Amino acid sequence: MYGAIEAGGTKMVVALGDDNGQLFKKDRIPTGTPSDTIPKILEFFEGNDIEAIGIGAFGPVCLDKNGSDYGRIGKSPKLPWVGFSWKEAFEKTGIPVAVDTDVNAACLGEVIYGNGKGLGDVIYITIGTGIGVGVYCEGNLLHGMLHPEAGHILLPVREGDVTEGSCPYHKNCFEGLASGPAIKIRYGREAFELIDRDEVWELEADYISKALMQYICCYSPKRIILGGGVMNVEKLFPMIRRKTLEYLNGYLDTAELGDIDNYIVPALLDGEQGIKGALFLARSAR
Image 1 (cartoon, one colour):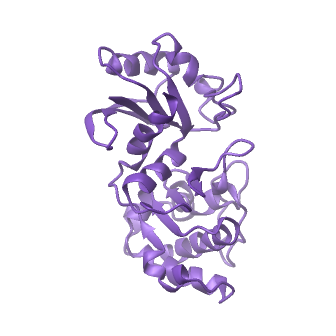
Image 2 (image 1 turned 90 degrees about the horizontal axis):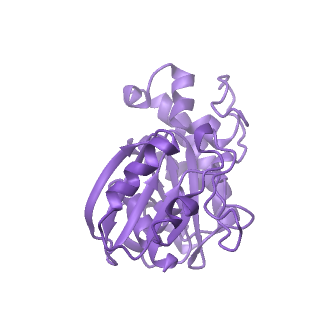
């Protein structure tokens, strides 16, 4: 039996499951301060014979397993959590933990159980309240200096788009231009209220495709998986596929790009990719 935590800014999803990704028990705990939230998480796991716990956490978070700050949250906009250590929170329980980012956990879930299964090079992008990118490269999640923050690549602003972006650090980054909050700033309404306005999604697809073109050139993935609340707008997919090929402009000629409908695909796990990825991540903590 393993434990899993998908630590989000508004809620913590907690679960118990097995080696095969089967979830036995799952719950949602509102994200308050650490002193409010952690006791409820510990209570959920209490009394179960758990080998290890995998945690997919909002970041930035230290992922260096050999460092003293492993599992510690850095300069997060979620101020009460700055400096909080997931490792230290569970040390007194005696249960080992493995920590990665929430989007890396979701990427891992899709690679092991979903639309990236059998592939060694995949990127998973969540487009919702923020934009995060999980990178699975040559059979491993990519970390490096910290972890990829590819939702903050700078994009050319489309002519005529005069709305200030939503990111407080980079107004014209991918997240600043194409996240759910960016859509609301631009149009004054939530994304789900704009489904019938084609110009909204044509612009959204344009920004997403500009980002995908750069990811394809930089990471050379064998599949791109798109998830998150904004990607529930299904008509975005054919627009993104077409525009991505337009931006590549014939520069790359691969079998994957020749089958674009099976190259840029939706997430398969119905929102459970993060918690299932965290469950699988737990195995590395043993």
